[in-house]
Image 1 (cartoon, helix red, strand yellow):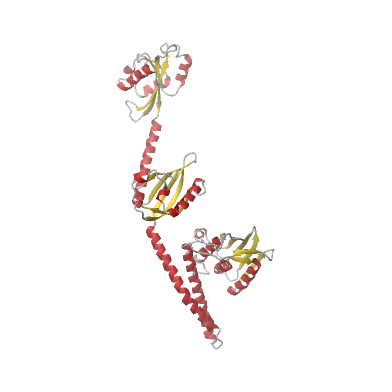
Image 2 (cartoon, one colour):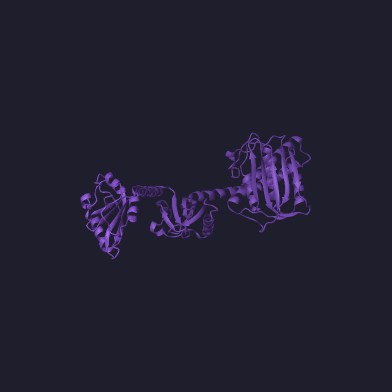
Length: 488
């Protein structure tokens, strides 16, 4: 290879290793003469237009542009015996980056450095990736700062590591006043437990992403109502490293909602009394034997419409109670067979012209459970009414009662229009009436209210539906409630 005869320390094994390396390698002696280079170093020199026959020549002859700094570094290594590694650009092509390692070789019999091995590693791609990541981070931070919503990023211990200007303006803090502090330090006291509960579920991966409402306190002590869309953040090893939250100020929306709920509640309350009086007088007129058949029909129509209006007012009243978190049920110990028998009589009165099949699988006549009978009747009547509105007159409506696993199981099945997948998601939302060819009118409150009734009983409700085939609503209610009355 034309290499200088090296010291015994530079044996053939070392030379073989250096020759096989894919990184450019050369060795200099104390006179700065190159005494060894591998094939990769020759190719590297040729790549830059440098001489490739350099054995025995000084570094400064081969690289005339070499500055005093690397020469001083070589001197330092010869004197101290300490290796050095630096990152630098090449002399001619400044877009390329290299990590240059200089490793001393010692005399076998003394601590003196006799040679220095230089390994040149191309890290251009790594530097490019690093620069790209830095640019990506700059764009990411710029995007966050220009967002119209507040952004709050925390670490795994819930400490603030990034906030944007929108959030700072919302809470009236400076960035320095928020960084490093926990989210709970800015919450109103009544929301701290809720936030901690959500955080624990996020850490256990039960709900990696969720939307919820929180109240924050500004620096001046004002309360800000917000909606938070929170997402867990994970590293490449799928370890939780923090969370990312988008904060929306809904104070104005909340105020409007409260005024709306108050208006609806007051209106519903004020309507109930006059409606009760009107219904009472109409009921008396219906029983008057002196009225003609024509007047009797008029009074019947008026009474049915008054009853319908009363049901609407009751639905609005229930809606207000649900949204105000004061909706209650009053469960009593009820014999299940008696409840079913009374329901069968009631359903015939309410739907005299419909084909309704009722199946029972209740094996014990003494079976009792704790339910609010009026509310469960409301659930069943509403489900049957929906089934009737969504199917033809000649189609069967099937109601099943069964008891298993300490729970009452109810199903109401029809052979009607069914519900499309596009509309299924809004089924249990308030004011989400889905018109059909059999029923164009409705408030869209019924399913929302009955689902709330089931929830208040600690029960569950689900639906299986197929468009143009029909729907089956299922309700499961545990036989025992721990707290009376139950509210939510």
